[in-house]
Image 1 (cartoon, rainbow, N blue to C red):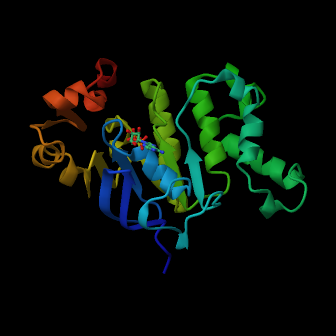
Image 2: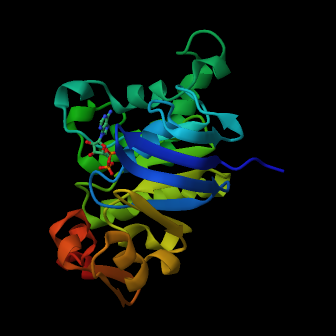
Image 3: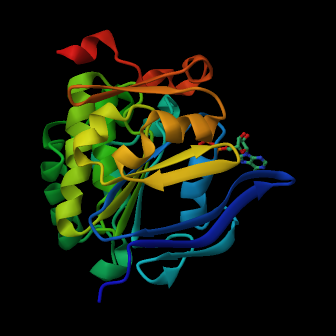
Length: 269
Ligand code: ADP
């Protein structure tokens, strides 16, 4: 039997006295796509950092049946986009090559096998035509494709994505979601942090909704309803289904980050 891509047992995250979540039990099957939602500060990024072995949490975390550790080849990571031009003087091709574990390919990372794998990845994400352009000159959507190519380079069991849709327009959001969900066919499971559930809704197997101090895990229907979200936020929340879209309304929510889940005018088309 294949080990779960990710297994959290009685996991808890606290900074000093401040408990962000506790009692989290989560077993993610190969190929599963889980959206991680919640307002800023609810511990979403910290959860990814724990799985990357960068953040201590209590309980146990296993990736593909093994305890977590930094530099785990079973984990691919698409970090939050930060527009720091100086960090992107490198070309897309170089960024993708950095995702390839040299140990698999024998000595000399720049050998032919590595280069051919880089080409294959560039092709897969549709980035071949701008692979030699410095990252800083590329659009957000183009950079995101290259980051995904880097993250999937070692065919990871688990892909961790930290708000990969931020600052992308709707067509690019769709392309990025499609690219990431495609990895599920190879058995790669995904944890996908997003403020916008609607772009991932068609691919979403389950939702993990964190609100400071608490969480809810379940199918979209189990989590995205008035009763569950009102309980989680401790305030009246209304969840409206309109066609294949979900709109979340609530005074506190609207004032916070989840207002991004409201319909954006441009998304209606
Ligand atoms: P999210 O991704 O949901 O916005 P984070 O995981 O980034 O949440 O952070 C959760 C909260 O924990 C934030 O309020 C943040 O300031 C705080 N925090 C993050 N890292 C640390 C740390 N190393 N020490 C203390 N507090 C931290």
